[in-house]
Image (cartoon, rainbow, N blue to C red; front, side, top):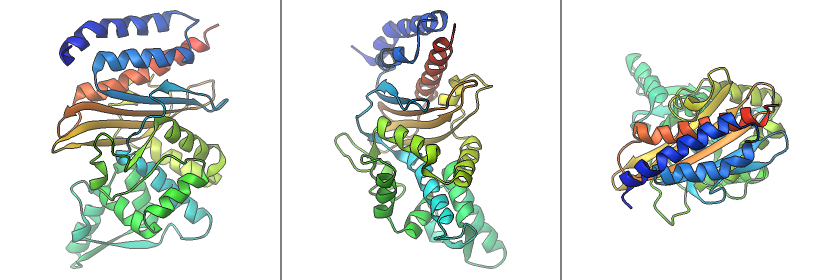
Length: 311
C-alpha cells in the first residue's frame, strides 16, 4: 500500500486511540506499546520508543531492542562524561582547548564564534573551556565541540567504558562527526536501542553522576532549544522537561529524527522518553511531518500519564 494511502487510512484510527486514551481512566502507560505501533503504521518509517518510569524502572515502548542511529543524542552522554571527569578531579571544567579553523564543521555555532573572536583579536586559534564545550554539545549540538571533547577524552574506547560502567552494553560510537550520522540498514556502527539509552540516562540521573553534575546536566537539558518541535511539543507546557535531539540525513541516507527527554510530570516520579525515528525517506533534513511523529509520542505519553493517575 502506498505510504500516503497508509497515512490516510490509519491516521483517523490513531486520533481515535488518543481520544479514548484521554477519556478512559483505565488507560495507562501499559497501553502505550499498541498506540505506538499504530502511530508507526499511520506515519510510515520505523519508530523506536522507550518510556522508562523511574518510580520502578519499568520500560514500555515499541521496538525497544532494535538498533537505531544515535546521531547527536550521543552528545548527552558526552557532556555527562566531561562532568563526571571533573567531579572525580581528573580535569577541571575551566581547562581550555584550542580550536582551529580547520576543526570547524558546518554546524559549529559556539566553536565558530570562538574562532571568529580570536581572529578579531589577530589570533589564528580560538579557545573554549571544557565546560563551555560540554554545554555547547548539549544545548547547541555543536559538532566541532563534540569532536574536540571526544579526542580530549581519549576517543571511542573511553566513551564505551563510560556506558558500560553505567550498565549500558549496547550503545556504541565508532566515528566522529559528521560521518557518524551515515547509518545504513544493517550497520551497527554509531547505534543504540531505545531501551538501552533510556536506561543509561535513568542511571545517570539516578545516582550515576555526582549530585552537582546531575544538576548541571539537567539545567543544560532544560536549556536545550533544538527539541522544541519534537517530543516536548506534545507535552503540557506546565510539565518540566529537557532533552537532547539527534538528526541525520543528506545524500542517499534516510532521515533520522531522534529525541531523548527527561520528563518531570507534576505529582509523580520522572520519566525518560527515548524516541528514535527513521522516516524511511531520503532527504537532507526532517520535515515538519517527521517532527510531528515525535510530538505525537509526547501527546501519547502525556495522555497515558494523566489517565493512569485519574481516580
